[in-house]
Image 1 (tube, rainbow, N blue to C red):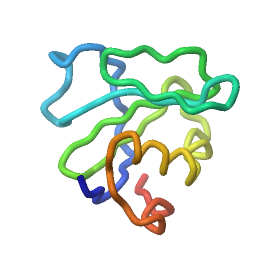
Image 2: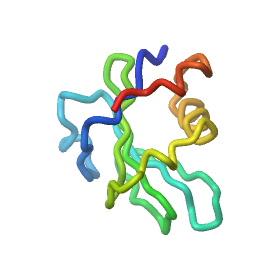
Image 3: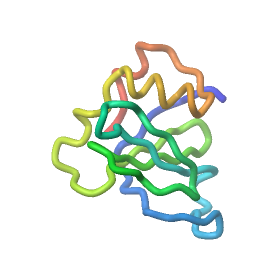
Image 4: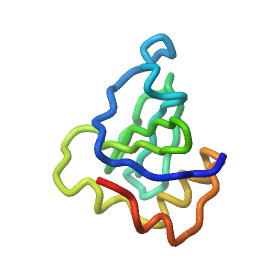
Length: 105
């Protein structure tokens, strides 16, 4: 799938079942940075393990929505080019590297 944009403006819910997934989204899950710095990825039926920073992701029509788990203070500083590229690969999304520096809040 081709990524059209990254949207950081929605606060995504903490859900664990497909039945709880709003029609607003096609898919949903979690990702984060573990205590040892390794990136972690999970689907809708997952739970965050012990993370330094945790996030939720959702997809709809080429838009990738990302929101923080817990506190929102400066959470976007953790969305580096590296973790965004890693997440896109996990989600099998294609994007130019220039695009990643221009997500919307």
